[in-house]
Picture 1 (tube, rainbow, N blue to C red):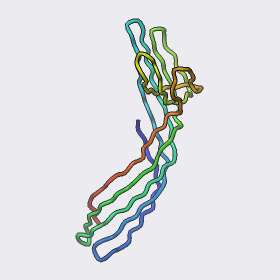
Picture 2 (spheres, helix red, strand yellow):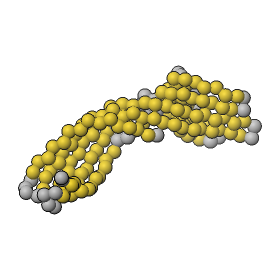
Picture 3 (cartoon, rainbow, N blue to C red):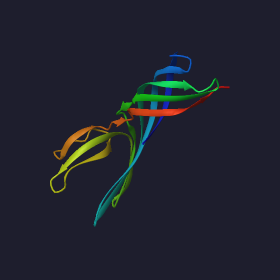
Picture 4 (tube, rainbow, N blue to C red):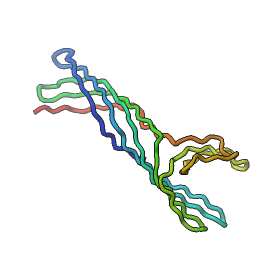
Length: 162
């Protein structure tokens, strides 16, 4: 799983004295996401390999605040806390299935999150690709797979002015 954010941000710095500034930032971005996944199922008489190559993306938002301490006219130290909301569920791509019976590739399939209830093994979750929503009595939950890059970060560093 990886994502490349294309972000647009606005920054504002409010002086709180001669050496301290309060910093604000906010913005939005589009996240180009990619998921590659390998699923293998096998027993003594059969094997199945599935390779998923999917792409998706969506809009996310970010913001933060911090303090900047000017150590000299040319050097400063900053402390920032930022948060990001970026969650989306629109992954499409190719599903290449190889098994004891041969190989086939399905194009333009959706990525689903499925909870499977199998009596001898219990309930487990898998990612599964299909062109239509999977159904069946053993499927406890079926929904489009969602990827969430949301979270918080803490940054600290130096500012050098020239």
